[in-house]
Amino acid sequence: MPDLQPSGPASLAGLGVSPGRTAGPCLRMAGPPALPAPNPVTDTGAELAVVGEALEAVAEDLRRRSAAVAGGDRGAAEILDALAMMADDPMLKEEAEQGVRDGLDAPHALEAAFARHREALASLGGYLAERAADLDDLKHRAVAAALGVPMPGVPSPGHPFVLVAEDLSPADTAGLGPDVLALVTVKGGPTSHTAILARGRGLPAVVACAGAAHLVDGTYIAVDGATGEIVTGVTEEDAARVREQDSAERARLAATSGPGRTADGHPVKLLLNIGSAADLRPDGEGVGLFRTEFLFLDRKQAPTYEEQVTAYADVFTAVPYVVVRTLDAGTDKPLPFLGLPEEPNPALGVRGLRVDRVLPDVLDTQLDAIAEAARRTGAEAWVMAPMVSTPGEAAAFARRARARGIARVGAMVEVPAAALLADRLLREVDFLSIGTNDLSQYTYAADRQHPALADLLDPAQPALLRLVELCAEAGRAAGKPVGVCGEAAGDARLAPILAGLGVTSLSMAPVCVPAVRDALARHTLEECRELARAALDGR
Ligand code: PEP
Ligand code: MG
Image (spheres, rainbow, N blue to C red):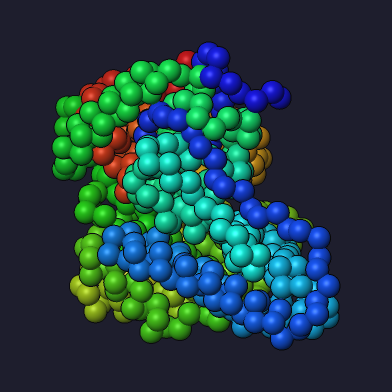
């Protein structure tokens, strides 16, 4: 494919992971340092010192950047601190020093040590494999420091720009200045740090955009972080117009507040998806999905009971209504401390609630901790299990949760079998929450992380909506709430359709709430139902 010149509008497709529209000149990240041919080591002591100084310089730079953002974005500061700890890892340093003792110069010894650590992480698959990019970034920084050249990083041209990168590192994403209008990456997935941080800041972002590899610095592009569309070759005037429209739209949305309602007042609760108390924002009507496994993703030791009570109480204290999801381990979110064996087909294996088949203590301790945190804070904690497949699983989970005094117990609907028997599930539990990310993966037999299958994973697909409708109808018949908490719930175009299908709540990344609130308020319930009928027909 030739480089994309600003000769006329053309469209590139990626995955929209953080909503918002903007436009401006694009600029690429400064590339990693070129590693020169190895130098023979004449002074091992001096070379060892370079290794230590380079790693310290990287850690120090990250700590400095963390301190600079600490007052504002806590999530960004935490990521920068975690990276500084990785750069400080004594095992990594020891391996690089061993490389020097074996005859490598400092840059090559660092390169080799990072490569070994990366391989180990990538072999774990899923979420942890996505973290392998973190190590690449640290490696480039350490090698640059050892070579005495500037560390790679975000350009600072002194004017607003769209940042384009092969795969944006968390360190760079976390340290972004106010000049950055949007993020576009060639690689990356919907669960990458780029996506999480961009959503946290309300910065439009598109990932997995292969065509972006050919963008030329300075080309004006328009970015739609909701649809994933990038238009190249726009004029400077067009770009200014897009930005003006976006600011006006943001100001209008920011002025909205209050609970979710259709134009004629039909309530659809607007809830937040969070991974920890740090993700909470002062909007929405509570938390609809607290992904507890996000608290413990990188842990090698199981979290203790007390540790869990504290983490859950932190959220319960801030928000009185919280739906806690019990640990959803496996496939894209492996939890190393569980010590689960590798599987040939992890998405179809022992994951989510199924982990309870082999490690029942884990769920018992977590339910104890949730119940205790709710008692201590007086919060209304609802609890739900991920990856429920049968009414029997739902019943067993409900028994164990209720035995601990947890008042409301629910099941996630992420497997088509659960949707098909939603009515029977609702005889066992008090509510359902539809995880459209997994439900579309399993309905369409399409890996949810696969950028090339994005069309199948589109939650507007009629077969998926049909399953949502089945659940919502079962909820209506039973008089019990049925919400959606997958990414579909944060898509303003889908919100009226989901409301028309009969769901009672939408739970989403906090940044998505204003646009979803606005989209609901623009349609009456009958209009939502008509939109739903059209979507089910594939119209
Ligand atoms: C889902 O599958 O839609 C969901 C909300 O759970 P997660 O994305 O954490 O798997
Ligand atoms: Mg899921």
